[in-house]
Image (cartoon, rainbow, N blue to C red; front, side):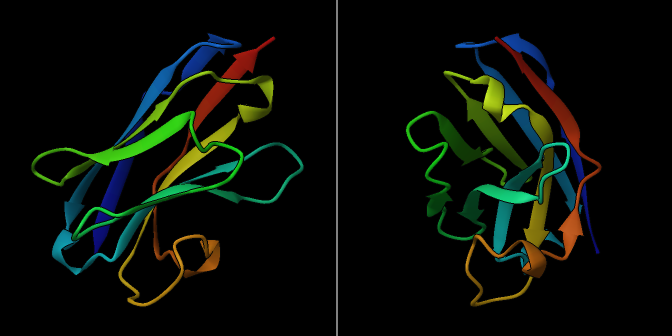
Length: 125
């Protein structure tokens, strides 16, 4: 089992920045991808960014490319999402996720088998 705990959400004005953190514990050696997803009211959960647990290659949704950066801490037990130039449409609950399923696409929300509790990000205009 893998446990994920997010932190760092909050309220920010349009154009501002926030950094989300996801602390991991448990059988992290088995992980393939760690990712961030978000879900706005009345919408489906959508892919934001992901990082390969070994190797560190990254993938981003087109809507956040150039504004968001996913990274890992040196000990690989924390994953970050640096969010810059935030827009009101970025408002959502953000979830940290991880998968032990090798060979999947990073964007496949249904293939992530570990999830955090979510943290609210609200961007005011």
